Image (cartoon, rainbow, N blue to C red; front, side):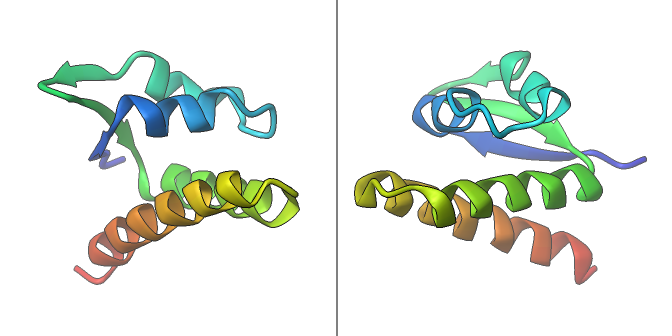
Length: 89
């Protein structure tokens, strides 16, 4: 199964890892991500990325913290663009 390399900032990684809704397999890729400059490179399959997007959407939709919601919304948009690009090939 092909894996997509995705650049995460440390803040984006922490946003995902620090919330209990994430599946352990999804956060594992972020915990073992390679550091390249100021980014962390994690590898996800299309299905895993789709699952991660579902998690991010669920947290964004259920939080009452508007700043946290905005952070998750921005991360969702970024990852959704990557997923769309990969599935349109």
